[in-house]
Image (cartoon, rainbow, N blue to C red; front, side):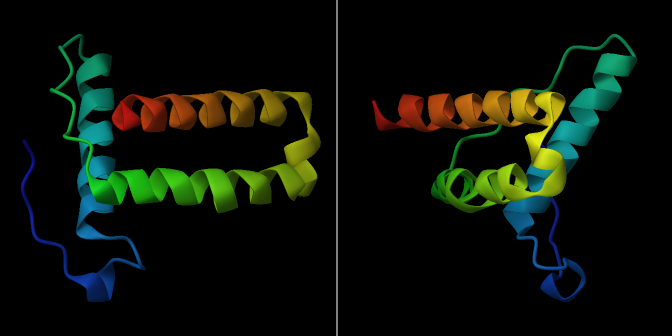
Length: 94
């Protein structure tokens, strides 16, 4: 598991947990390119749940309302992203 301390003055608003998720995804992408197994999933925290809820309520609708949000490709991407978030939130509720 990655472990680091983030100095908020350099994070541009991203939390330490956000950076942890970012570097975890980056490392898994690197592993995939080299034919290695991915790292174990990170524990799903309350901060993750809040980020997912905010994304469903604010981020995805903002993209849908943007000029590029109306394209077929962007719409399909946003639909998939929305389903993934809803599924992850639904799993945590059970």
